[in-house]
Amino acid sequence: MKGTVQLVGAGPGDPGLLTIKAKDCLEQADVVVYDHLANSRLLEYCRADAERIFVGKEAGRHTLPQETIGACLVEHAQAGKRVVRLKGGDPFVFGRGGEEIESLRSAGIPFEIVPGVTAALAAAAYTGIPLSQRGHSSAITFLTGHEDPSKQNLTVDFAAHAGTGATLCIYMGMGQLPRIAQELLNGGLSPETPAAVVQWATLPRQHSLVSTLGTLVESVESAGLGAPSIIIVGEVVKLREQQSWFEAGPLFGKRVVVTRAREQSASLAGQLAALGAEVMELPFIEVKKVLDPTLISEVLADIAQFEWLVFTSSNGVNAFFELLMKAYGDIRCLGPARIAVVGKATEKALNRYHIKADLVPGTHTGDALGAAMIATDSMESTRVLVITGNRNRPDLVQKLEHEGGAIVDTLPLYQTDSCAWQETAEGQQLLQEGADAILFTSSSTVDSFVQGLQQQDWSSTALIPKYGSIGPLTRDTLEANQLPIDFEASKISVKSLVKACCKALAN
Image 1 (tube, one colour):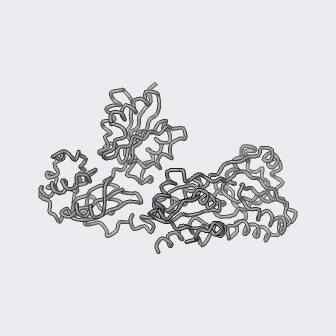
Image 2 (image 1 turned 180 degrees about the vertical axis):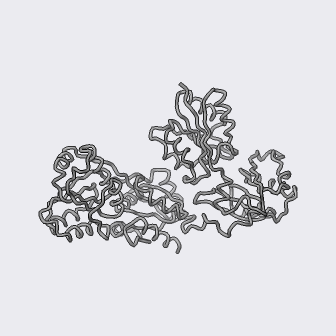
Image 3 (image 1 turned 120 degrees about the horizontal axis):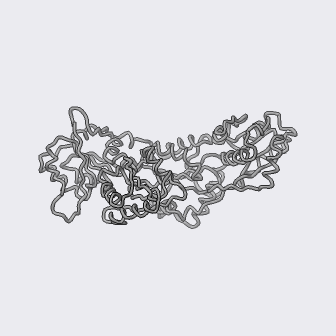
């Protein structure tokens, strides 16, 4: 049985601009064939068992010939697999999608096209340039400047397009920019015609400049811009604001490292990206389930006897309720137990199970949680179950037992281990290129960072990062490792940490 091939537009770079249908395709794919302009973060939507094949092509470096790519799609489809060909931008806008379709048609392979946001539209939007506006331009022309530099003539007659009055959007034209600019001038455009170049549109490393057609080549050389870029020529360019809405973000152009375990980093990474940061997700720790079947059976058999359930992390919440539902399938098995959580993130995890916390301390630490529970005057001879991990400090249990008089059982359900982050591609990038800031969200992330650094010396790194702490315990661990604390969240929360990062990097 033959499979199918879906030619899917990956959009211009920002993962948020992927269409819902494209996401659905990636989630269902058996094989994903992708190029270098498709953001690699989109592969996170793929199933764990999906095969990923990189066929990226860049100017001067062709990983695979176009015919080989077509053959690859046919081969996997003929094996009965659902294949996604993930292409930067839109498959039919200078994406050679038509050539790949011809290969599929010849082999009798069924296919589908899923459009994507093309680079010119995105570049204009993310730099605040209206491609069409009454009184300035009522036509838009997409052109390609991708030619072999050794050729004496351009295939596209740019001079002919100079007199149309349309906004010209030129793809893949940086290698031929001097010739393109001269052709447009020869065609009658004034040297004062507004022109812009946008490199890496929609990504945190976006760089744009506005010039005139007569000085564009010099301006681009001075700014050091290269591919991938979109060139926009026309009167509408002068309507651009002095600084685009996207490039005005307080963290725009800043590289910020997020150290949380990947499954927990979405909120922090999302808030940073929304402020324009280039977010490097580099988990320094990984969280694994660690289950003692005998202990779990004993605790769950007696679960209705506990008067307080205490959660010290969202990991504990998720692991506990997964086990509880498998054992009982009914939340009422908890009986009248009250529930305490260490902070807002843990409370949010609890809310996902449609359960409200009875107690959340104002300060999100184990010590504050213990004090708040004792202040309820309900601890004396009370049975308390603390759901925990391998790195939780004993302070909370000791406080409840010694100061509150509670009878405390602990149920460890996960362990937090250090990652060999320095061996990953992102880790090597951090060590070689540096970052503007590293956000430490727990003591364990600090310990893993120090472990991975070993004898590494930041002095040879291009950009020495500032260190940010989410709270006092993390700060103490940084100090214990003789690392500087450049900024700290005013409250133990992701939102406060992001705010402190913005303030520190603005200085």
